[in-house]
Image 1 (cartoon, rainbow, N blue to C red):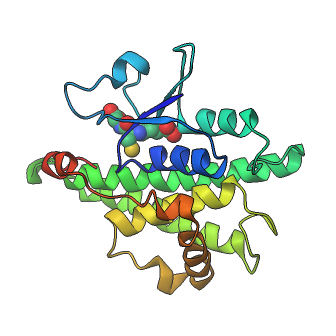
Image 2 (image 1 turned 180 degrees about the vertical axis):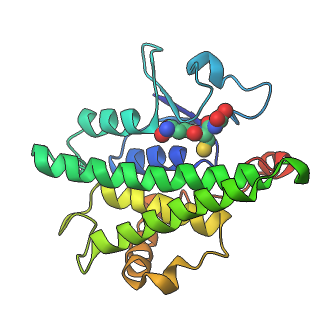
Length: 212
Ligand SMILES: N[C@@H](CCC(=O)N[C@@H](CS)C(=O)NCC(=O)O)C(=O)O
């Protein structure tokens, strides 16, 4: 299978971490959806990454669909519990983390608008979502070793990706000082090769485009 995506997208990173944890082989096709020559719209009408292209050339998007599919194709390292109540708890974590990301990306895009078009109200509204979301992550993690209890799941991956993106694009927001339990979790996650190997980084092209 092939994964279309960029090195800076946190949603792509989530899919790459799951592929690594599940030890699934794939080809990573770098494609920046903001580039006018991007082939992403041919694979996903919404023009967003990640897109997973399967052996029969059918495509899967978005990241939540992709990771659930990947978890089902291999029994190695189950990341989504089969028990319905536990599965919903993991998916709730994922929705929360993805929501924080959505707001974090929105702030980045807003800040890049020309001064006259930039809205401080929009930035503040999105920053509030980020701060509330991270506070709820910290509250729900509590003193547990992993987001949903004693086992590493997709919830931890989603949470780690969201916090990693805040470090990458919002380094003035010091969530570690406010939420020491999340800081501990993030340090533990950073030791996993799947997360360490996919830490967001600017490519030359991406830096030039200064997209997200
Ligand atoms: N909900 C989607 C979000 C994907 C998304 O927004 N990806 C961004 C990159 S971080 C993108 O491709 N943006 C291009 C665009 O919006 O045109 C997912 O989880 O896959």
